[in-house]
Image: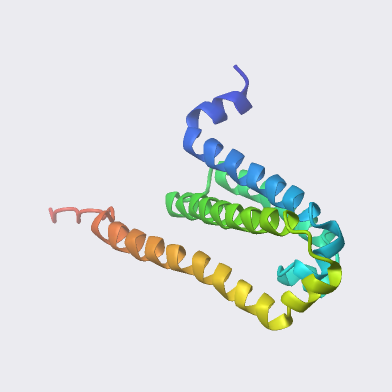
Length: 164
């Protein structure tokens, strides 16, 4: 059996979440492209607003995907770091599902570009960004707090050697 395949069998949870993360990336990209003519008016991603293109987002996501795989499978990666990586992929994946739902709703409308521009004001985009950030930060905070207390209770401490 190859080393790569053994790694898949040993890290089933990571592999499932990793596949979920990659699929939601592609789903988000495809549903965004369904709104091609209105992307400049609808896209709330900060990176898109800075660069005016989806390419930096795509490149960054590919780099993150490769980094997630490499960091998780690095022999020196701590258990806590692995937990955070899985948490990150789960939360981002679910936020992407909400973004896909939003993009599908926009694609289903028959609004003209002018009507979309009237609805998708900078204030509306900022409000959408705040909602997505809130949906991300609350689960992160709850999970990190829970994990911190769990680690506190499950800390492995060396017992002092008795004096001779």
